[in-house]
Length: 320
Image (cartoon, rainbow, N blue to C red; front, side, top):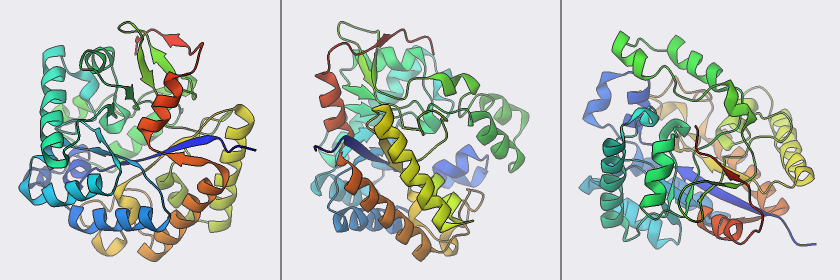
């Protein structure tokens, strides 16, 4: 029997982006761990014979020190996507002209660094708005991948606020990051946004069908902090639920999945950062092989192209 499709992606957020979201003013110096994590991620994917979509941040692509690293990602055959220029999880609050400029700046620098013009987008912190969808469609994007259909957004936001010391202004712009309870009712399977002639394809980050809890690799690592066996059972259950629900999973990696506590300075607040690097790499390797055993793993672009061929794809109004 033919395996169902699954897509794999990596949101290549640098250290400064996490610090910025957390309200640490030291982010302005643009501290980085890319020289450490990018080779690790590329090595891991090569070891498991997998291609993925890397959503790059324009600000990082604009820096000469990252050019060689980003070119290596493209040279290895991975897809290049747009993850915004400034990596503001409050991107959904942008006015239209600011949104257009944000996308354009990111596109220009990403293409210059990698030789690839992005056809896919993921908003930082799963940020999405009607303006974003309309601008992506206007700019000729094939797909968006910014929705995370889960109910835990408010919990994630509460954790960030509890572990941070935001000013009143910082708290105001972060008041809606990571979404709300209504996100748990979004579709898990792909659909089109009702913009333009055909509609922009949306491929949600897959959450567990029926219960809508996250199943991406960072969450798996967090569960393994308490029990590896339970984390593995959880992941297998999620893939089984996807098969029963007819959902072709789209899962993502983060750079922090490839960092141990010895390099956690500035990002130690992120869940699971106390795990040893060997533990993380073993769990990620196991999960990738489990995914390969269950599914035919492709890039987001390949996933979107297959979705584009489907008839009767739901068309939803972009009232986000």
